[in-house]
Image (cartoon, rainbow, N blue to C red; front, side, top):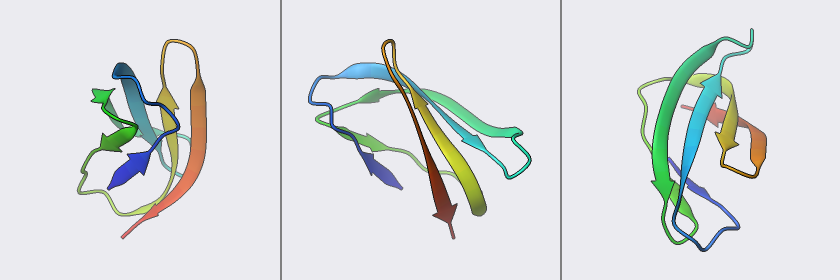
Length: 65
């Protein structure tokens, strides 16, 4: 999965996936490069995707199949 961000700088972020009960099932620190955040997981289902940087936090509902 790739996530496109409105961010052109390279900066570190922390990515979380939360299941429907709010339990953290995935966490990884990575770098945003040219506004793209590529990551992969073997998880399938409906999740809250949380992306945290130094100054912002974004949360979106995602379906991974």
